[in-house]
Image (cartoon, rainbow, N blue to C red; front, side, top):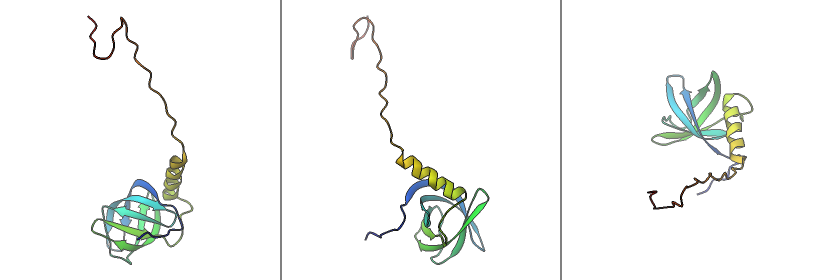
Length: 120
């Protein structure tokens, strides 16, 4: 089943701390949009309130789904500023930047040597 999303999800790898009233957990955001994130490495029950902490900045969210080692967190307000938004914008820009082909220089051989031949 494919879920129609209003925002494009971007693959990232951002180490974060997920904080609840009772605990702080280490995790990694692997999928990010302005409206939410997929976090691996830790889990909380669905409907849990939490905050994602990164570089002294917090983003609040609600756990929408949870599996053994990952969870989806929805933000009540879309990201518009802060370090998490900056990392999302940077990942989006990198995704749109075309990669140009740079041919490698060829090694020049002396004395007619070629592939599979030894210079003697």
